[in-house]
Length: 195
Image (cartoon, rainbow, N blue to C red; front, side, top):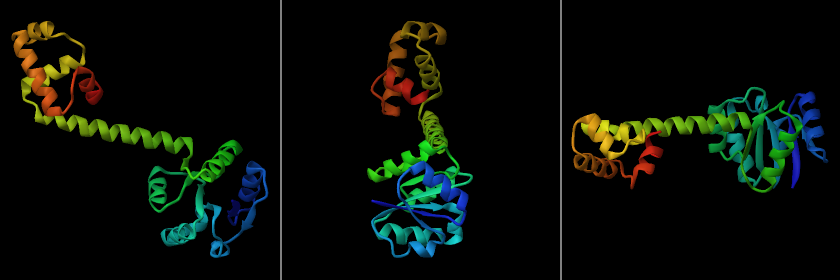
């Protein structure tokens, strides 16, 4: 696949070319990319301006694989661009090895995101999942919530029974109800759900 670089910033183009270390086409404007098909297009986010959605859709429709490099990458922008069909997103000034990696990954028809944004994406997903899981606790009675917290801490039924002044058999019944309500099969699954 041909690789075409698009930016008005000559320093960025030079940095990208040096990083990729192979022959690349260069366009200074987005209009220069309008007739290109089946290529890897590396586009400076600053060039996209407000009409990015339509422009990217056109590039993707022509079977181009689009990578957008941004001087200050943001998670929300990454999510938006990926939803439009962009296959790569990263920092315009990142190390050459990352730029080369993005091109190689996209050549393999895989999505590439710079490590900083990947970390933010994973953290936000984990936090969203934790909030969703915490919200499931409302399905439990007050006593079941107490039992579930002690189960997650690793207490055995007998110790939970002593702490809550109930019988081990009652603890077991609560545990079974907890597993059923939270749709988990055992204590390990409960721990993974609530941790």
